[in-house]
Image 1 (cartoon, rainbow, N blue to C red):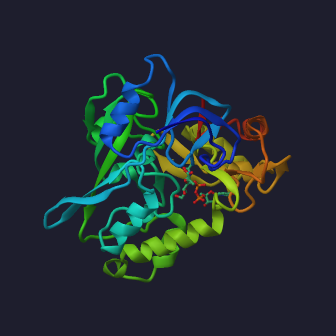
Image 2: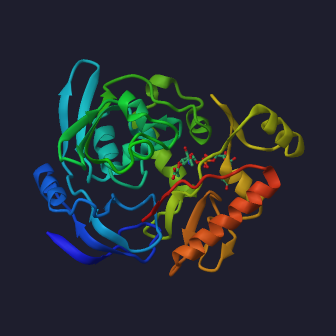
Image 3: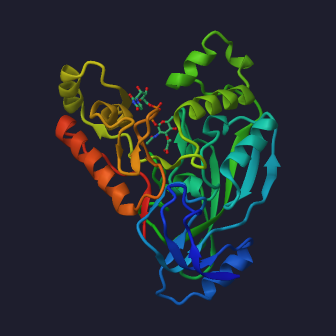
Length: 336
Ligand code: EPU
């Protein structure tokens, strides 16, 4: 049940070479509890989903768990809502596909996001104007410390932009086993986000089905974001930075075409625009580069080492800092 010295190069979408000292893929909560109970108390513990948001900086010591609970079930329903519960190891887009196929609203904007269901709350996945936080009903997890089951509602998850309790404040304390989402049987889909809005411009809201939104989101993503199976990457490599109004105004005076969006704490800048303007779009440094269709995505053309990835990320950050006085924050998590 536990594999030793396991190769992780296919278990991370950036395709970095690394090994796990011990690797387990438990497919039920009792098996997961067994794996955790068998671990020495101070042994490091890592959790991976599809490895689509990590930078493996070296071999992982101790125990690595890849949850394999893949069950998707309709939990309950009423006239307006349907609650769907999925195991942490289920493929996220399969959950989206199955719920959209039934005509339920809520996950369509999050179509084709790589990764597993268990990873979704960890970084509060978001795209095209929607976030997991909008539909999340409950996260079930196992406490690493003593194996007890813990439940979190959306508020308790402390969701922020690509952030949560699990990623920040209580990092490493819980292993997510299930996620329940609350979907709508009817209502209007969200199509107000940039690229999406244009496609549905002339249609009345009631004619816009979740299936149509899913098709549009998939087409948009495929036109910009590289499929990790064809070109290794970990999605957006940096978060979109938030600056204050004065800073925004200064930049706007200098760069009238600056792309920015309103935000509670100031103005959110499009990191892809900053990186493109800094000259990095489609530019490579050895085997790694910033993607030619979407400058926010760092790609591994093959055989890259972690130091080559971090050198490129550092060069991009330095140039953006120098040109725009903006500090980019890396989005994928570095392990170990
Ligand atoms: N832009 C450029 N050049 C580029 C890329 C983007 O000028 O090379 C500008 C464009 O003007 C565009 C704007 O930036 O209008 C926004 O670009 P896009 O709609 O592609 O979205 P993003 O802000 O770059 C975010 C998420 C993506 C998510 C998309 C769509 C983050 C860090 N990234 O990217 O999420 O798919 O919005 O909602 O928030 C991920 O997290 O891994 C991810 C891919």
